[in-house]
Each structure stands twice: as C-alpha cells, then as structure tokens.
Amino acid sequence: MNNKIDFVVTWVDGNDLKWQENFYTHQKVSGDKRISRFRDWDNLQYLFRSFEEFTPWVNKIYFVTYGHVPKWLNIHHEKLVIVKHEDYMDKNNLPVFNSHPIEINMHRIEGLSEKFVYFNDDTFILSPLKEETFFKQDLPVNVALLGLMSNSFKDNTLSNNLSIINKHTKSSKYKIILKDFSKWLYKGYGFKLFRTMVLLPTSKFTGFKSYHQPQPFLKNTFIELWEKEEKLLTKVSKSKFRTNSEINQYLFRHWQFITGKFYPDSVKNAYKKRKFKNIRTQEDAKMVAKHILSGKFEMYCVNDALTDNTNDFDVSKSIINNALESLLPNKSSFEL
Image (cartoon, rainbow, N blue to C red; front, side, top):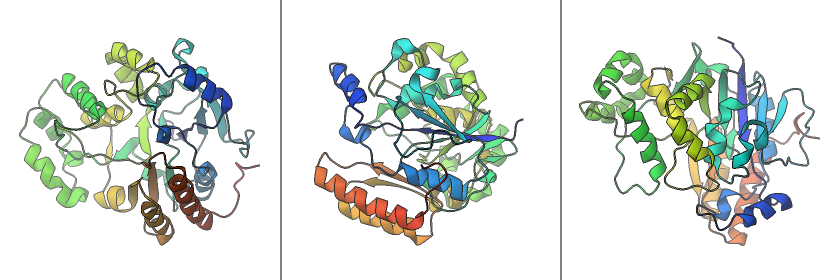
C-alpha cells in the first residue's frame, strides 16, 4: 500500500456574498440552518500552522470549499490542493449547505491517497504527531468501544448509521468481535472495556463511543460502502441542509470497525490527550484557551454551540484565537 498520507480539510466562509445569495435562495428547503453551522471563527490559519509545525510529513492537503478561499492562503503551495465541491460532487446536487454530502463523497477527490485523515475546520493540532498517530500497519488507528444509544437520542443520524451497520452484519456481533478480538479487547482500552464486555452478548451492535477528532480513513472503505448502499448515499448527496433522516461520515468509521480494518489505539491517547469541547458560554471559551496552552493535549476540537448572540461569539472567538496565536505565533508557508 502507498505510504503517503493526505489530509482533507473542509471549510465554509459564511460571510461570502455569493455563498449567502445561494444560501438564502434555498431557504424554503427544510433542514438545519443554524448560524453556528456556517460562521467563520477566523482561525483556520492556525490549523495550517499546526500542519507545518507538527505534521511536516503530510503528503498533500486537500482543501475543500464551496469555491471561496481565505485571502491569506497561499494557493500555490506545493502541498496544497484546492478542491471545489463541483470538482468531485454531482453538479446537479449543488449547491449544498450540509456537511454530510461533502463528507460521504470524499473518496471521489482526484488524486487523493488511499490513506487520508479528515479534518473539520474546528479541529487543531497542538503538539508534534507521528504518522503512527493515524495509521499503523496501513490501517487507520482508532478506538473501537461499544456504546448504548438511547431511543431518546436527539440526532437520528447516528441511529441511522447504526441501522446500516446492523443491516450488513451477516454474523452476530459476538462473532465479528471474536474474529478480531485483539483489536476489540485491546488492553489499552483499560476500564472502558467494561461496557464492551457487558454489551458483548447482544446479537446486534447497540452503538459506538463517539470520537470527535480528525478521522483516519481508507479510501477503499468509501468505495465499498457506496457499492453496498448506493441508493441511500445518492439520496444523502442531494440533501441541501442537514436532516435527521441522513447518515454521516461516522458510518465509514464504524464500517472500518466491523470489517476489522483498524489498528487499536489506547484510551489514554484517544480521550485523554485529545479533547472535544462544546463552546456554549464565554466561560467555556476561557477553559478551552487554558487547555490549548496547558501542553496536556495533542489535538483539540472546538465545537461552536453558542447561540446567535453576537457579543458572546465575538468575545469567545477572541479568547480562543489569542490562545492559538500564543501557541502558534509564526506564519506558515501556507500564508501569504
């Protein structure tokens, strides 16, 4: 297998006038139109600084956008490939304002390596990482921990993912886990193994522990699932705004689990060295800023869960961006 590892980064500039025109033209279409889905935190440059500083081994960075690019971005950088939605998605389905169609078609990006890592634009690398953080023995590194999904779960997307997994599970969950028991019962999972052991006797998968971090994928995983679920994935590809009747990129993560195409990571790495935080208040932003500068974390996902209060957003953005600037003060070669 090719040892090259690419990164895929998706980004949207909600301030772009042409994008806004298209967005408001399609307002009658049902779906999630929350401002937090589209507003720009003005900190993408720190992700690119972290690539240069902490992952210099990356082969190519595929930067996926509606068509706009940040004014500061050096579009001629040898490692950078600008990808517009129209470059790899069916033009009849565009425009879309929904990350799900953008994500589930990533394998169609021309030139993309078999091994790639998917980054949302709210994830940041905070310390040096090796290729082995994401891939070992040509397999995506991940933590396969069983979970229990509540029937009252608000977002049906993960439930839909689970239905697809169970639909294609020909043998019992027990047999699948037994086949790759060294991966599912990996000692690095520690006490987190308890839930997996408790849920082991059930015939179907009941859920997986969430992991909101950059995701390592094999391109072939996408190809395989598209062959099995072309009708569903084609339908989702046409969805302009998020709805609860869809699936998302985590389906492909879970598919790698049940097909044994993953290398086990430790809980210490996945959940102690990496952090996910919803920003709902300015106090949350202050906590994240401390975490960024603490030296305790190697990756961090800063999720926008603020209301539409402009002051809270502006203040929170300033707090977090000041911390990122302190950590990564020097411009990268990706910046003009």
